[in-house]
Image (cartoon, rainbow, N blue to C red; front, side, top):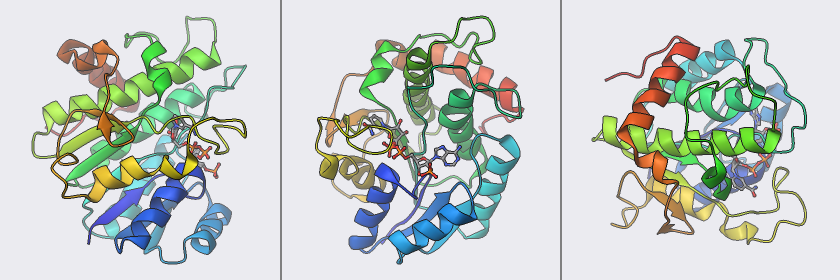
Length: 257
Ligand SMILES: NC(=O)c1ccc[n+]([C@@H]2O[C@H](COP(=O)([O-])OP(=O)(O)OC[C@H]3O[C@@H](n4cnc5c(N)ncnc54)[C@H](OP(=O)(O)O)[C@@H]3O)[C@@H](O)[C@H]2O)c1
């Protein structure tokens, strides 16, 4: 049995991964943005061990999530699942002054990675759209560029992939991978999404807990339990280091060595 923390588990793929892991006899710690969504999560996944509460768009709340999770004891795996989508047609800025998509999709998983006691496995939700991401750590907050919501989402999913690969390189004792779940009909994916929703959470759950040698690898992007080519820039140690430096600057938190 493994203990797995899943961000954004009140809905969509996070809830599906929680349900799948619980059905396999694993222990799941969930996460929801507020008390109301935490109650929804407890109703939807009654077997859940605990629920960390906090809005991932703010650094203080994200730090508090890390504290809540650490207080519950050591984890075997973290699935960085929570995310916001590609349909933001105007730039939303958080109370901390960051682009909302960057804050939720990139700054939060980076902070949680740095602040949660190191688990044995890390899984980051990427997307096929990461291939259209801009391979640069400049202007992450879209202060100088004209806002493009779809591009901001693609960039954030490239950054998640880079995070997964950078952690695989920096922390060789941890298995760190990224997952493209396919385009599936969640709140984010929308009703017309063509891929199989029932398969959408399988790969991240498998990477988090399975002893299958195919799942016990690090530094890969998976699609339906198979490695898939990632944006070539995600493999560049230079780009990985530039991104980690930029994220440390934006959050004021350095990744532990
Ligand atoms: N669906 C797809 O087709 C698809 C394709 C490629 C990649 N992905 C990736 O898969 C992951 C999960 O997506 P999904 O389709 O399951 O999306 P979803 O149904 O919209 O669920 C996203 C989850 O994240 C939570 N969340 C969003 N913003 C948050 C915030 N500021 N603070 C706390 N929690 C927050 C949501 O909470 P609430 O429920 O309270 O809003 C929800 O539980 C994302 O990282 C996404 O980029 C999805």
